[in-house]
Length: 309
Image (cartoon, rainbow, N blue to C red):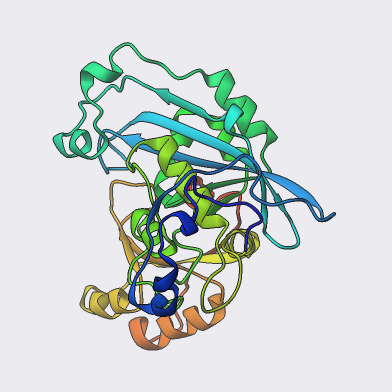
């Protein structure tokens, strides 16, 4: 599938030859060790992208802050989604002292404490230089990472974004969850997670995989989803008694304290069908349903809401 191995230890050095006859009865799990060259170029168009990950003081998009940022640039073949070069020498990882306390849970997960980040800052010029070179920014849960980084580094706002978590229907591909460490184990590797650069490497390894059901490479699926035009649909003034129907259809609640809040909302590629459903099932009348185009430039960003009429 890839021209060069993810691993420092070859399978032949671990597995006895007799075990090959019973390959369905075991799995091999090895530490991830990404090489610089993952695939050899085949003459196709080559693009540049950037995987990013953040560690934060907590999980609130409004109240928490970034304490660690990592970025790993790479190149890929446009037509096939094959990862070509992983630029380890240009990888970035930096710590930042936040203006709010680090929660106990965040410290337990990341190993980062107030003492570890005290007095630390992240070089904005270094961030801007890596972002400028990328045609696409990718994160595993971009709806969190994008909001957190755009608050501090506006350069992220001008780039298209993709998400390796939400762009794939992991359940239909045969996986019970979309967590990065779980997916890695299903594909045969483990890594020291919950530090930003290690998570970047794991995300990049995931992008290089072929999906078991669709046969599509993850990188291609993420890029295709990023380029797709979707629509934000807002069920303004939806009757309170219909909230369960909205939840079951996948609508989420936007709190009143946020811009254009106090509303149920969803993102869809078929706004006409969604509007028809809302009018028939929620409003019971020909109600006005605001919609707004979602692209890779505003998807996952709070700017999607600021742009509303």
